[in-house]
Amino acid sequence: MHTSLKRTLLAGVTSGLLFVSFAGTASAWGDRDSDRDGQASSYINPDTGATTANPDVDPGSNCFSPDQYDRQAFSPAGTATRNVHNDACFLDRDGQMLDGPASFESGGVGFISACPDPDDAGPKVAVLSDRNGDGRNDLCFQSGYQMKNTAGDLEFHARLNNNTGMAGTQYVTWCSDSDRNGCSDEWNSSSIRIDWSADGTATFSDDDRDRYDDGDHSSWSR
Image (cartoon, rainbow, N blue to C red; front, top):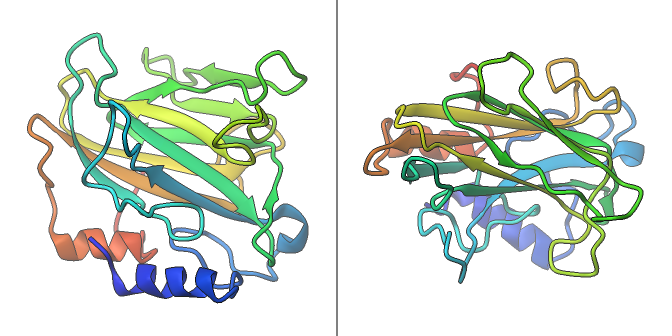
């Protein structure tokens, strides 16, 4: 599960070398004013200690060392008991987290099951929508990162689920999205992949999974 790139990234964080490129990020530093927008980094949260704890995800997965692939069993019909926690952030050269707006956009099987308001009754907003009318929410727009004086502040959060019994792959792209229309027209993005099945076993090889975690997403299309 731990690729050599993940170890390299973790070492970079420890030594303060936060300018290392993050797996799954679409753009390198210096492109299109990344100093202002921050570099997108999306990851799967292992939910350690929660009822939705995810043993297939690297326990150290975070914005600086993202695990971006998961294999997951279906949730029982009508439930979200095996939902997947997708977190993300924008990082500047010094590793500081920058604010949004941003969107999570889902394709393939599954759907977005939660798109929490970043600050509850505050001025920030979250909008969950079904853009293609198939009955599954596929776009979560959030006007900014979480600010609730609790764990997870300065990051963006969404939950992904599949309780339909339809096996396959869910691709979730997270991006800077000031026009609130999804990620297809955005350059600053980062993606995760979830392989859903009845028993939670992978449908492609460990070598493929390692390539995906290393940022090689060229062989999959949404």
